[in-house]
Image (cartoon, rainbow, N blue to C red; front, side, top):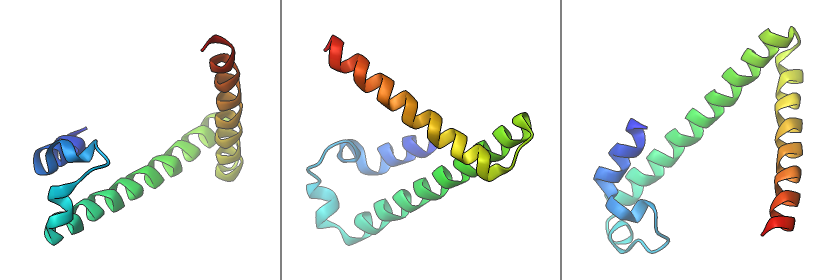
Amino acid sequence: MPFWVVKLVLFGSEVFTPWTPVLDSSLWLLLLIVLFYLVDLVIGGWYLVTLSRSVAEVYECSAWLAFALILLSSVVFSVVLSFVLLFFV
């Protein structure tokens, strides 16, 4: 969350819109936003590794099997959610 606050302070509302005239006009801001997105990617990868190892510890299996379990549960959740949204929206 502090990461998003820093992005909001530095880039303003352009973080949330597809039109970014200020970011496009400044090379330094553009490089900085790319750096922020790379850090986001690293944090997301670290989250998946930690989650896989935690699930593996709980279920006493390998981290790869836990990662597959996380992917499978995500797919099942997405399919169920899409059917619910299809029928109720």
